[in-house]
Image (cartoon, rainbow, N blue to C red; front, side, top):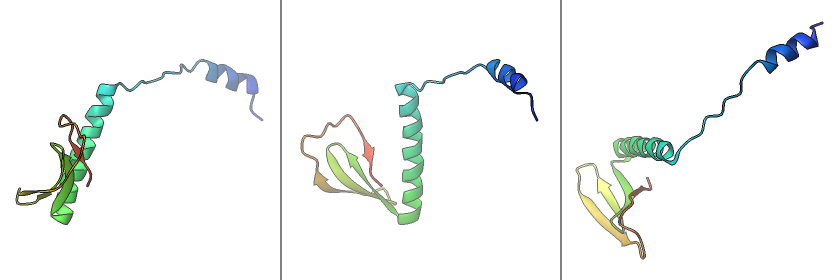
Length: 83
């Protein structure tokens, strides 16, 4: 049988450290993940569907872009990859 006092002493010496994510960290990691997923989708399907400049567009593997539908009230500052 283990001595519970030894266990309590050893665990009380462990410092708990909390790592906080900043908005900058989340944006950096999410951007990298979206780019990787988009690239993989392009290789697999040959196209990706994304939001760009207030439009839903289809970008084909050859680089051609076709507008599908305008996004009403959309901000042109952000890009969103849906595929």
